[in-house]
Length: 366
Image 1: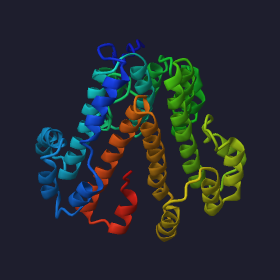
Image 2: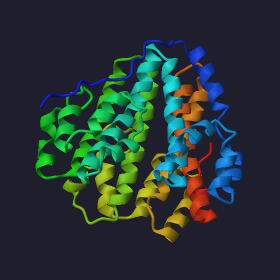
Image 3: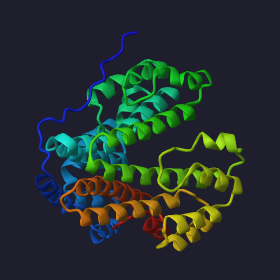
Image 4: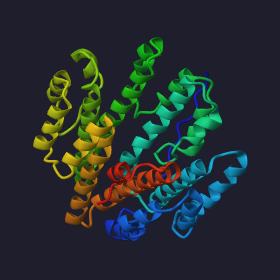
């Protein structure tokens, strides 16, 4: 079977001057919605009113463009979420348009995680027999692979054809690495292999670039720690042996080592894991409130947004300490995505009347 050519974004028309880049980014950051504005949106009586309130923001044009999908039977909630997503995609494309050189390479590394998200989305879609249109609707055209390539990938016959094509990329393992998971029909194994390959490749590429790359490596390694901690929290509630647990561990973090991972999972105690987090990562503010909510809801996922505060705070501190470095752009990329998550939470809160206690814990501001 012939393979599609792997096509990526071309980053050759911008600049590599951080003074210019960061001035553009700071202007874009001024458009982010603050706590007061988000809480005002949260008080909307219904989605129609919320839609009207957002029409005057930078999201207005994107939501309006998505409204044509209402005629195709899409719910108002889904239309507004699609508008938020299109705004995020458009914003990332705008950033790509004025980058070149090292800033472009580093941005490609960070946004490369969206490539893995898209590959996993396509593979999952094939696994559950979704139509190409359904799969494409879920994609984020933000990473380094082009929209055209991803849409062609979504139209492949099955998961095997998808893997045959994506395995031609140098950022991913060779095709043979997927074989044992394909034989076992192990979707989780395939996804883990993609995730691990992303971080391994990203960290290796960073070593080759220069000083700014070390900041990016530090960010990625901290992110790996958080991913491993969340995995540990989830697995601690499962009956799983050491060997099985180890396959979920992603190498490359700063502080959360393999021995910590297996020891804490074996302990099977969420409190011990959180105690480690408090001691080793020095994350304390707001932890007690999260633990109380966890006890009430019995839901590990409430810690994800708690760790997001930690990552955003670290990035903001680094950006303030080096206003002419890559940290300013790196911080904005994460802040913009956090705003997307905040607004999705607001949409659901307004539509379904979610308890304010839960909503307040999920919204993140720094």
